Each structure stands twice: as structure tokens, then as C-alpha cells.
Image (cartoon, rainbow, N blue to C red):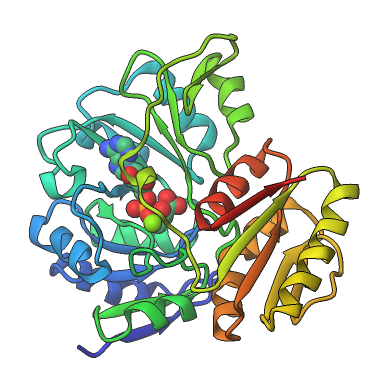
Length: 342
Ligand code: TXA
Ligand code: MG
């Protein structure tokens, strides 16, 4: 299949080009597009056949449900059977933006989207191209991250082109994703909100708005334990580059010598080493970040970049598991085959 690449300036999106891509969506085709988190692989969420094709193209397990993207809050009332007051509060505060809200689904959601759950995950992205695309298509857009299953989520069009060129009719190339990690996912379908996936909208921000929330088994706000609840997608190993990832975490004065020691050790074994962190480490390839936001933004990009450079080992300097750091550590741990706490 020939893949069209529409290059669109994210600051001044060309509406005519977006309309061409929207036409493909309307006709049941798949279009990869930028969002503020990562690139998505979109299909008309109400077209079961188109949605099923997403799973085929990505090689995605059929029990991992998709996020439905909308351009207007009003759409939520068509897609969800119940919209609790607290969910409205979240929508008002964090939309458009990197927050996905799980609600009880309405009958119009095909089983292919929700993978037989009775809920649907909905997000209103802030990226202008994404919103214009959804608006022009006139339908809600189901979209997982636009990578082959198991690869790191794509943060720029070149990643999507590498994974999906020849497999889908169109890719919108619209610049680098601002955030670089996938959206926060919160389940609002039960009595107590549950954080299913940490992201740029932080646990602290959500608690501020909701008062109480469960996070991976821990009740925030109260010191009570809860049973572990997970999102279907969280059980899969994700985000892994070909290189072995080693995550080193702890106080800076211990992390820096540990990473230097690991470098010497792996070097003596003849390995090629890439390091992503905050210090200018000796290494075959490295990337020095100024803060946690930058590390989040470049993590997936560097995984892919270091793979292209045939690196054997990628060492990642961990961060505190608070704020955006919780999301960053969640993704880094998923990619890592070794986690060293110093
Ligand atoms: O930032 C993002 O969320 C990106 C962009 C494209 O919007 N999308 C994304 O989609 O990361 P994906 O498919 O890679 O991750 C969706 C996550 C999975 O962990 C999935 O299990 C969870 O959302 N999810 C989807 N529907 C759900 C539901 N009804 N209940 C619980 N979890 C759900
Ligand atoms: Mg994904």
C-alpha cells in the first residue's frame, strides 16, 4: 500500500491537507496523526471494520482496548452511558489535554474498541492538528499509539514512517510531540477514581481535583491499602528498544558513581553503551537532559535513536516518583530488564 505523508505546520495547520486525511478516515481508512503526547493511529471509532484493522496493522493483542478521541466535550455524552459529576470536573479542568477518562460505555461503541469491557476510554487532545482532524472527520476517532506493538510509542513522524509506512494510507507529519509520554488514564466508571496509567497530568493534580483516588493498589489521600487494579494494557511489556535497558535510581551522589561504574563494566565486556540522564556521562553515545520534563520528552526518541546506532546497553538515570516523574519511571521500568536502586 502506498502511504501518503502530509507535512503540516503544527503552528499554522493547513486545513485543506487535514481535510484530505479526514476523508480517508471517513472512508474507513487509517491515518496516523500527531497529538501532544505521542502520535496516534486513528480510525473511525464507530466503524468496527476500520477499528479491527488497527489491531492487524499494529500487531496489537485483541484484548487491549483503544482510546476514543473527540474534538468537543459534548461528544462524551454520546459515547458514555453515565458521566459522573467528578468526571465533568476533570474534563473542565484538564481538557483539552493529556488526560484519558474511562467511563461506562454507550451502545454505539463497537466491541472492537472496548474489547468487550463495559467501559470506554475518552480523550480530548490539545494538539491543533489532532483536533482539526477529528472535527473534519465528523466522527470520534479510536487511536492507540502509532507504533508497532512492543516498540516505543512514536514521538515524531519519522518513527511512525519507520513502523507503519506501506501499511496505512496516510501519515500526518506535524512536528515533535510536546510531552513525549502517553496520556494519563483515569477510570471514573466506579465509585472511586482509579489512576490506571500515570502521565503528564500528575497524580497530585488529580487528587487536588478529586479528593480521593486509588493508584496501583494504594489509596491516595488516606493511608489504606486496596486491591491491585490494572488497565488491560498495563500487563503487556511495552516501550522496549532492542538494546537492553538498565535503569539506575536513587540519590544523585550515589547514582552518578554507579552509572560510571556500569559504563566501565560494560565497556570491558566490549559493549556499545548509550546513556540518558542529567550528567555528562562518559559513554559511546549520551543525551544530557536539563530536567524531568525533557527526559520524558526524549525517552522514547532516544530509545529508537540508540537502537539505530546499534547500542547494546542503554542506561537511564531514574528520577523521583512524583509529579511527571511517576509517569517517566513507569515507562522506564517497563522498558528496563534491570532496575538498580542505589
Ligand atoms: O497519549 C495517549 O493516550 C495516546 C494518544 C494517541 O492519545 N494513545 C495511547 O493509546 O497511548 P494506547 O492504546 O497505546 O494506550 C491506551 C491505554 C492502554 O493501556 C489501554 O489498556 C487503556 O488505555 N484503555 C483503553 N480503554 C480502556 C478501558 N475501557 N478501560 C481501561 N483501560 C483502557
Ligand atoms: Mg501504546
